[in-house]
Image 1 (cartoon, rainbow, N blue to C red):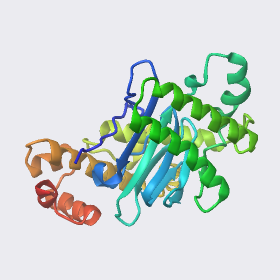
Image 2 (cartoon, helix red, strand yellow):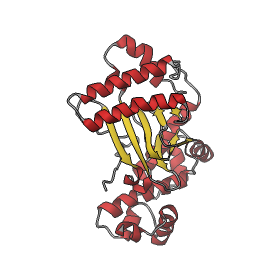
Image 3 (cartoon, helix red, strand yellow):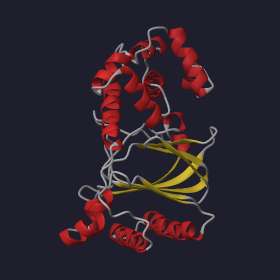
Amino acid sequence: METIAIELMQDFSEIVHYEHMGIPLYIRTADLADYPGMSAPCHWHDDIEWIYIISGKMCYYINGKRILLNEKDSLMVNARQMHYGYSYQKQDCYFLCILFHPSLFGNNKTLLQKYVTPVIENADFEYLHFPSKQTRGQEIAEYLEQIRRLKEEAANAYEMQAIAVMFQLWGSLLQGRELVLQDCKSGSSSDLEIQKNMVSFIYQHYAEQISLPEIAASGSVSRSKCCLIFKHYLQQSPVDFLNAFRLKTSCDLLRNTEKSITEIAFSCGFNHLSYFSKLFHKNFGCTPREYRSK
């Protein structure tokens, strides 16, 4: 089984590894079980993301909102949104992920300014969810299935055909008035930037003994404001988020290094091995040693 790891920059934007240099397009089917802890880390990127559930279910987080995606459901996440997918009741899920950079819509400035930029720069437009039980959801799924088949067949110039399908899909969403073209600037967007700064601080300093006041200071807010922002966007306290990230990092080290469990615990910021083991078992249902043996 291939383990899929998402690489993040210091501002926790994803380093997207496109298939071909110069073509910012990513098409991949995967099992959620291939991700450490059956969850991706919280991240963002400039690409528009599509998720299509081939089988199973997946929970998805976007800017503090949580969505349950059922089999054959589709989800579009707008550019630069904080998001990640994770397992539903620890069940596996087979899904299609497409990352499509807005630059692929072409170099015609008029078309970009009229039909693309007002969507991706709309701070209030976060995502679209298309349930499979609805006719529209079935229509959207067919577009994504076309792209999936093109990738599987991998015929010559399949990328051009996949981009053409994405053009058709975008046009369909515009015709259906599902894409919001207004350039809205809401007050909550500033809190989102603060949240990004604080999460970025945690990603950079998780191995150190960082405190709640330090996390709050990284966002230039009070401790109470810090906790309110984390609760709104992540439904977790800052300390819970910090520990969750430390645990995910420890999973990578248990799988990919020969370090002892004690070394891993301390390198991930845990002061006590017993506390690390207790949290690990609570989150993953097994001890660190059992996880490594699996």
